[in-house]
Amino acid sequence: MRKKTIVILAILGFGLGVVGTIALVAGFFIIGAACSPDCSSSGQTVPAGAVASLVIGGILLLVGSVLGIVAWVGALVKQAKQQQWGWFAGTLASGLIGGFLGGICMLIYLIAVPETPQYPVPSYLAPSPYQPGVQYPPMQSYQPMEGYPSAQPYQQPMPQYPPAEQYPSAPQQYPPQG
Image (tube, rainbow, N blue to C red; front, side, top):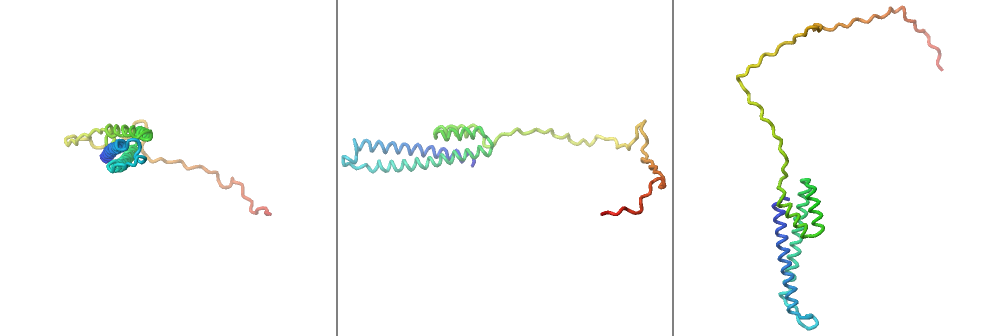
């Protein structure tokens, strides 16, 4: 989820939550003003505007909470994908502790941290351009150094074996096995 989407969801969730809270408070004030001690015992009916305000406020508060939770989870997923574990732990802990505190931590994250993490880019030196005027000497053939034997093929001396008569003869018959 992109940060722009998370910001839009968070703002919508916060805005709907504020409007829903205002509608709920207004509905309760209307009921409190219309029904002095108790509407049901005095036979008075609850004003329709108060009921509508309570229902609309409750729906707006519920939708705002859902959008806020979606934005919060989206921020957690983004932080985990980017392996920003400090921000992840802070957003998770503050969101679990309290909704308002979690919103503040998420707001700081959305403002302070860039969309893509800034990794250090290694700088490479550009290779020197080809210079056509430079003449390199041709490769020379191998020249043996003084003091070392010449480069003639190695000849290994043939081993000297004793004549065949000197070996003991093997017995012609083997003892029976069994």
